[in-house]
Length: 459
Image 1 (cartoon, rainbow, N blue to C red):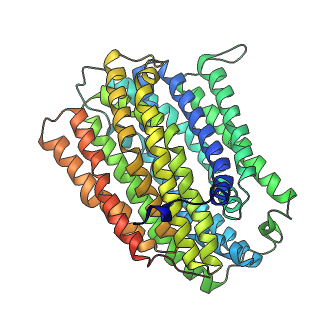
Image 2 (image 1 turned 45 degrees about the vertical axis):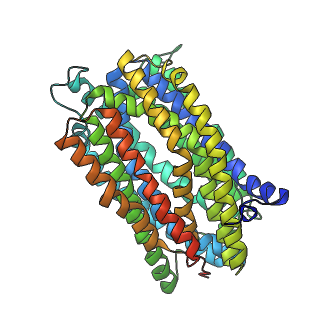
């Protein structure tokens, strides 16, 4: 391929960064505060860190299901916006509200009665490196309170995603900044018991999350409804709850593969983490630390995926097929180059990050190695992630399902289960092998993108 086709003009990068930087700031602050929360809980001990980490792994599955459920309608929102069809945008927002409520109900029916059993799956009986019963108790305490935060979080995503899809990336960013600052403050006050506040420990971490999610919801909803000129979809949004039957059918066809994909992918990642947990609480705590640290650095390529959805989706909706292909190619190249540099910094600083935690030396040493593995894989993860969003922007939801979750369950999970159950392979080579499978996705994604069949106008 001609290298010049991978490089854009100054105006191109200004446009991409104009969309991406607010998302990076929003995701960056969110993940940085998640890191602070993780460190605060980690200061309590290994069992507290492990229990909260397992509970958050279960919430992660819910969050990704919500993301997938809203993404199908989001494809149409972006293209309706490109077409300047405000009524169509309102229909998609209503669909998102219905979807969020259904996913909330399903999540509650699973996580409330079966939360303890799901946490237990990550705990190895007879583990000599920590107290399994204590870890379960901490995980249970945290999960029961944190589930409340899913209600405001779900409604926030309906509004925030719609604003981003229509080019309004700053308001969601501001709401997240305020929310994460609130989260950090109340976590500090309620975990350790500062001033008149009692020390609630892991329960305090969960309460801080609930308060922050409510604040975030209020900000994004109030801004949207007080700025109808910039959030045009709010005009008459609740004047009717109707959605044209034909559009519902179209959105459902695109949504179900995405939602099923996110559920299968996130549950597949959860199964892989369970495979790592068979190596003891040291592995559980180390993976928790490594994932939290890597998420702070992964925001660049994660945000680039959002840029692909917004920019390429708008171009496809306007019928600019060749422009969309060119834009996509350059964004992918830009993201991979950035991640090469960011991954290098992450690897060098790995021992510094782990030294902050009040955990055993064994956990710190293992977490540092896992962070280096994440860093080495970052450019490849970037490419695979943005391939997914490219295919999705053109409505290729069934293909994204095969590319993402079918690969996880057809390749990654079987490899993880076999190696963790049928061999005595230590955690580090087990982790490296499972992570390296991402290289195969990159090869598959490259062929899919080169075909150009993903670039389609839907509206």
